[in-house]
Length: 281
Image 1 (cartoon, rainbow, N blue to C red):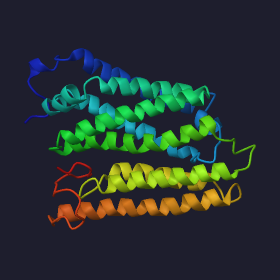
Image 2 (image 1 turned 90 degrees about the vertical axis):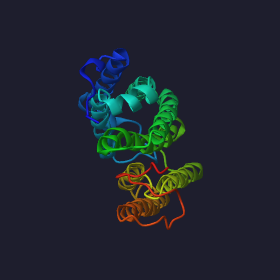
Image 3 (image 1 turned 90 degrees about the horizontal axis):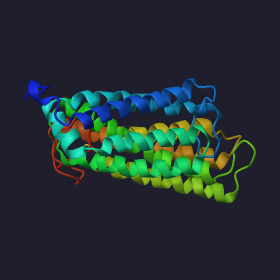
């Protein structure tokens, strides 16, 4: 099958294709603006005890660049089948929710931001399941379908917890961590570990991008939450970050087993042939 289908089919569903492109460019522009604007929200937002190092947020440009590739891929026959016919208008909806989350975060309306990111995670999960159900077939499917939305899914789950601390947690700059805050951080880390574990066992090769996104957040949290600020939180995050590496290694081992064509010794999911994991059927 050629990458791009018949020349007379590119204009089918043109409104949806246009909405996907405009939405992707708009959200990417919003993320760039938050970096270069005078507010510099990544460095001047509310500091909580679950806030990662500012550099961790530069995972957003990677995700959005990949989604721009998704927007190009939608003009191919295979891309149309998955992006247009299966995902449909959920991608423009996700762009809208993401843009509203970024805007709410920029103006420090954190409770609105929490609402928008929860809805965004819900939509990402639906797109993620749509892609899993499509059964990836080639390298372009891996790069332009699985990779961006797997990263998106793992990263936004972390942002739900961050947004909750921003909306209801104490300011780490002016207030010390009370027992409730420490308990909240610890339970959040536990939930993220469970999510990462589930991703790593979603198929024989696991779901490497989602596990990497969560691990990236964990190590950024360790860097930002120093022992001097709150020793319990720092070392809890450090232990969680080290444990999250185990799920990454589980995915890498699964990929190696898949590559060599070995049978599923882990007992989760049938044998598959995907590069990045997460789509065993």
